[in-house]
Length: 118
Image 1 (spheres, rainbow, N blue to C red):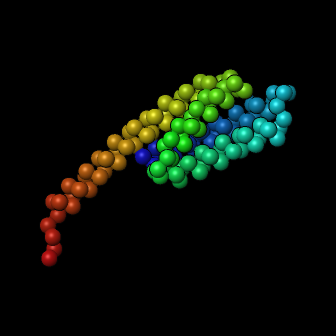
Image 2: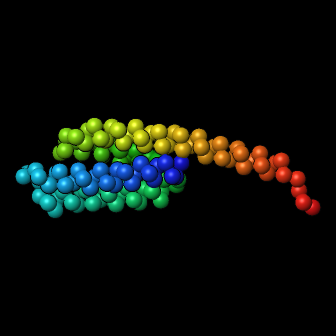
Image 3: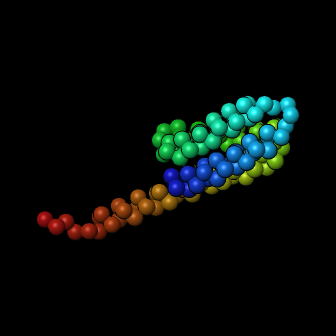
C-alpha cells in the first residue's frame, strides 16, 4: 500500500506546486498566502508518504484529498484534478491493501511449506 499511496502523494505534490503558480496570477491573493498554503500542502504530501502505513495516515490522506478538491474555489481546474486524485487515492488504498494481503498470504504459505531444518 505504501508504494501506491506514496506515488499518488508525490503526483499531488507537483500538482499543488503548479496550482500555486496559477493562483499567483489572482490579484486578490498575496504571493505569501499562496505559497504558505501551497507549501504546507506540499509538505503534507511528502510527510504523508512516510505516515501512510501508520494509524491515521490514510485518514490524513483523505483530509488532504478534501482540501485539494476545496482548492478549486481558488483555482477552478482543481475541482477536476482534486476528484481525479481522490479517485487515485481510493484506488491506491484499496488495491494497495489487497496487494499487502496477498503478499502476507504468500509469505505465510511459503513459511508453512518450508520444512524445518532441525
